[in-house]
Image (cartoon, rainbow, N blue to C red; front, side, top):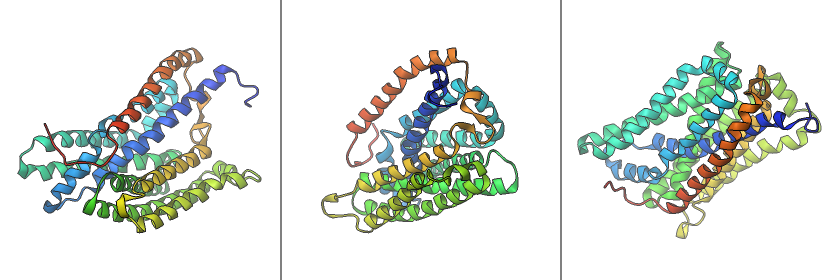
Amino acid sequence: MTPETMTFNDWLPVIFIGIMGLAVLIYAVLDGYDLGVGILLPMQDEDELQRDTMIASIGPFWDANETWLVLAIGILLIAFPAALSQIMLSLYIPVAIMLIGLILRGVAFDFRAKAAVDHKLTWDRVFKGGSLLTTLSQGYMLGQYVMGFESGWQAQMFSLLSALGVTAAYSYIGAAWLVMKTESDLQKRAVQWTRKAGRATLLGVLAVSLINPLVNPGVFDRWFTYPLVMFVLLIPTLTFAGFVVNDRLLKRLPKENDRHCRVPFFLTVGIFLLCFSGLAFSFFPDIIPGELDIWAAASAPESLKFILVGAVIVVPLILAYTAFSYYVFWGKATELKYH
């Protein structure tokens, strides 16, 4: 099937996988940083004020950020039901663990505001634990996806490595968020967190980049076919450059008048975008690697046309609301207050 011979009905699955991919990418960036902030919460008693500031930095956004996860799963359910059934068959346990983590985060976020002072640290620990459960389960699921949902020990080891890599990546973007949103001692601490998490994330990206082509021959052929290789290798080259530039910049932060405090976060967003582009290039048009493509998994064209009308209305509204909320609460995090 070539673009010249494709009809509108053939393009519908491409449109919906594009919308779903956009939702996953935005979720990874937005909920990624607030999960990262949760992971980074320091647990010493003397760090209570810093924990409050960290929570305040994500307070206006964290719940709405999960909207993009709901959107992505909703599109998978409605537009690609055949893929969802196979994915859930393989991933129902990590999905359940992820949901437990998200529930723990939601409960802890509210209860820390209402608990007695002696119990506040306990709920902060629950919030941190829920963040870790969520990120580790998402990383494990990504590893299983790359390995084609195999159950052998090699696939399990790679999935565990992926779980640690995604946790490092979320910590990376979460720490970069804190560099942008905080000041003084906490900002200096966040700079060190960002550098350490960035180096751990780089190791994870290198591991996935090396293992993915080895375990998926089709991916190897796609990446290393001449002359396309001359262009697609720009993705890992730019990704590596992003890590290096960010690390060098962080070494000089914070600067006078807080100059360049936002640059690490947006460089990290760029790294996320490049990594996502690499995964998309590796597997498109397969929605389950090596087994099921988007056309075989898609709902009937009549259903997709009906859903498309809703997507055209809903997605721009979510984008507009997200942009407006960040515009309103742009700037440094202030002292946390509950009313």
